[in-house]
Amino acid sequence: MTELQHLAEKRAAALAYLALTGRDDLDVQVAPPAGGPFDVVVRLTGRRKGVRQFAVMVASAVEADTPADADRQLASKVKALAKVGPYPIPAVVLLFTLRGNGGYIAWVSEPGSDGQLVLRTKPAFRLLEAEMLDEVVQSVDEWYDARNAAVSMRG
Amino acid sequence: MTRPAAGAHRGHKKSHRKPGVNGVSPADFIGKRGEAAALTALMQSFDGLEPLFDPIPLGETFATFDLFVRLPQVVGVYAFFFAQVKTTRRGVRPRSHTLPVELSREDVAAALRCRVPSYLLGVDDRTGAVYVTAIDRRMRRGVSAVPTTHPLNAGTARRLWDEVQSYWRGVHGPRARSYFSL
Image (cartoon, rainbow over the protein chains, first blue to last red):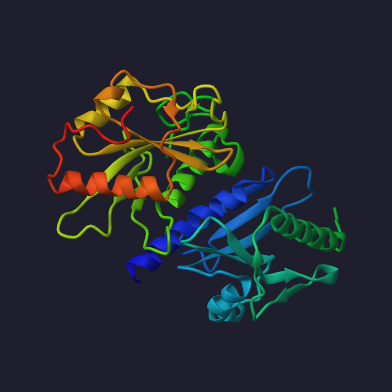
């Protein structure tokens, strides 16, 4: 790993922490280094029923000016993540660069209909803005709603 | 772990409060966010150039400083500085243009004993802005707020880099006044 990649990786981890902890209804736990492909596990808190989590993989690049740039640069990583899957919970990739504090987000394990998860083999990055994170959290919430509805309880 | 500043946690030791959000007390949580903001500001690439600093968190075992900051682009000497990170959610005081973060007289004295360039990084958690102030003899009585004169941006980062690498090259003596002094 070059010095530049090392710095980009460290900076991305710090930016991911800032982005995720900016919401007060997310509990952010950094995964141990040998904890598999997930860098961060995020638990949805507040008045929600049951345990609701999604996983985050943090990626870095020296620069990526557009979501299309991000798609190109992370294509092989997302493909590799798909090979390791499927995942038991929703999962996203966050990408940050050395320039600026903005980032990109893409689904790897995306909530689908009826509690299913769709494994993405190609990234479709979007700018990581507050509304985008809201959308991700809402999708995760709805996925757990659908999944929990299928859980029956027995004495 | 970074110790939060006034308004969040006035102590200088690890908080013994019960865990709140994100596995830490609310005060330590603000401190962690501040440290992350300081890391991102120090490692930002300005004008397409490589980052000037490589900050390494020192953790809770090192009481005086939060970050050991290496200058990777300096050739010939190993240049670094120490940083204390103080974070607040109280925001910048508009009249005095200061950020209310505290550094005690004892902490300043401990920092001065290290005899290497040391800086206080005041973080405004509401905006993510980071303000640089030198920890030197002008701060010996401690501070309850830092000026917002030197936000960490492309210009101040370059100035900070120049100052630290000059120190290690022996250009300036250890008692030279810092550009970032109070």
